[in-house]
Length: 263
Image 1 (tube, rainbow, N blue to C red):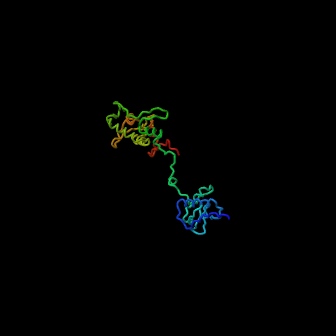
Image 2 (spheres, rainbow, N blue to C red):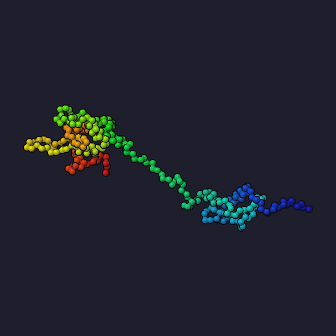
Image 3 (cartoon, rainbow, N blue to C red):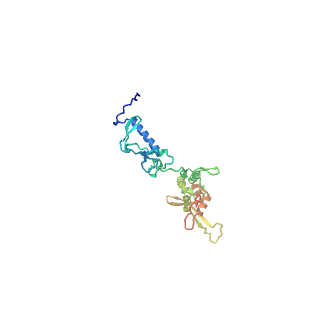
């Protein structure tokens, strides 16, 4: 008489409380269904590619995993897995609404171009020193000394300029003249204090066509001086005075310096 096989008593189908290990096993099995879109137990969850969910006939259906029984949760309680499938798919293109601008991208990118700083240019430093009467080095590398006030005319001067203006007053005029820092203002001062008139010769002939008179202004009063005293007090050359007078038109307007102004 054949012996009957010992049958293992079937465990009760009563639902047991799920443990973390059982929950992880259910999650792994669910991932296997998702990775296989052709499985009959899977159906697409939405229109997004690669997103699937389990389709049990009833919520909370009992599922046998190995030799243990556990409860399969409803789709609402499962952890979303669409992100994992999308990142694994190389052809996945995120929608425009899923892109979030980071604070770093939203900030304005500064240009790497240097800021224009004319005061640091060598030519501008040289020009500023020249207009202030200070020492500077020209483009040829030659050192040009600062402007100084000279002695002026002697005691033999017909106009006796030293008796009209003392040394302290001369130094004040010299300092204010070069503190302007502008060649246009210096030319205006020259044209304002140098008068050019036609030479009144009468019947006599003269090689001089014009008569030039020089003045130095003190407290609003113009004091006539000789040419030497005028040039030495301001630290100028005869050529600078001639150029300044040539810039003055018949109406008394002085044309500005146009050097370096490209148009």
